[in-house]
Amino acid sequence: MEKRLRLAPSPTGLLHIGTARTALFNWLYAKKNSGKFLIRIEDTDVVRSKAEYTKNILEGLKWLGLNWDEEPIKQSQRMTIHKNHIKRLLEIGAAYRCFTSESEILELREKQKTNGLPPKHDNRHRNLTSKEIEEFISQGRSSVIRFKIDEETEIKWEDQIRGEIKWRGKDLGGDLVLSRRALGYEIGDPLYNLAVVVDDNFMNITHVVRGEDHISNTAKQILIYRALDFKLPIFSHTPLILNSEGKKLSKRDSVTSIDEFKEMGYLPEALANYMAFLGWAIKTPESEILTLSEISKIFNLSEVNKAGAKFNWEKLNWINAQYIKKMELTKLSAFIKNYWIDMGWKSPSKEWDLKLTALIQDSMILLKDAVEQSKPFFSLSQIQKDGNEFLENKKEAKESLKYVLYYLKEENISKITNDKAQEIISKISTKHSIKKGILMKSLRVAFFGCLSGPDLIQSWELFSENKSDISLIERCLI
Ligand code: GLU
Image (cartoon, rainbow, N blue to C red; front, side):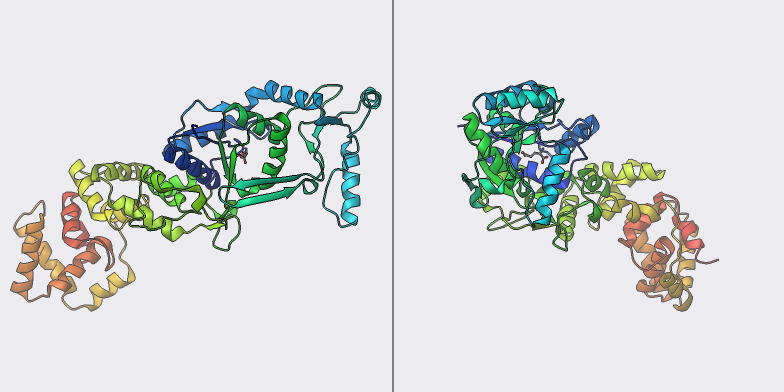
């Protein structure tokens, strides 16, 4: 039988790393089994759901390479179907109308609190007669529909990640509310646990893979599956993503939405590759740099950890750097160029762009590192303390720069090549007995303002093509 999995995001916020990781595990399992990965937008909360969030979630999934196989379903369009199923549950006696008012519920909670008991509905309207129902309605009381939960029932399922999970009816908080309040004999808007069962059944979902925060919902949903005589899917509950302190990763950890990772300069391939390791690990890794399609071949839900997965920035950065290192130069240059455009930086030629890209490629961790690393080639970098000390205290430092200027001007060199740069350095070193090291460090200070930076000769070539090498050297001699 075809394996059908789904992601069921609520569009009440931007695509979150937790939802994206759940999507990835669903996607990987579907691909591994030549199955289908589907999307259902759970937009029944009209106040919090927004079309822009749906757009953001779908775009984010696409960006990560998690394409879906069928047109996404919108839960809000299936309300009548959900209500029909509630009617059926009423008809077969599995559900009933409950008129307990908000204030009565509050009163019950308070009582339970003072007695140290957990909140639980007392199912007071489970056995109302039709006359009593009529009376409540004529008093203008609103009602919800509650699903009967037998206290004695035991719910058991084989979770693909956690093994056998058992739950008792009496621990589910009393009879379950299936719909919002409505007046008269109306049925109010259906709620999550009912809608999810009806829709997963309709979409022929064979495997439900979702966060561990849904475990108690699964217990409730299994009871609804049983009452409606629907075939049960196989459940898997993924571990939470934790921050470095072992707490659930949240907005306070500064980055949680996929957009933010994108803005920070992570590549989609790298982020997706890393996310696969959030709760799962390759048994015998030859390389951890793998495409999604490669991962899908070796991924197994039964190998996913039960314990929370700590978010490891160092590992993510390392993976991102590996992807940048092996990226095709023209592709990387196009990314970098966008940053330059944003900064208002203009380059002399496409060839120059590629050379500078190649120069910084290996030292980049994030795409946006390109801004810092290419900055000296576009705007004057101030001379730092170490650079200044070197120029002032190192005998022959300034002198060596004077010779560079002299040869550049005397030979009328308008563009330095690698060979020419080597030639000038050797000439100054032999003719004027200045150590090559001193000369090169002095040039580094002139170009970058400090004693560190990328390869000097290649940098010189770029500064020369940018026509800034002479003025950069001259500023050190004033
Ligand atoms: N809309 C639910 C959520 O975003 C879906 C849970 C599920 O997968 O059933 O948490």
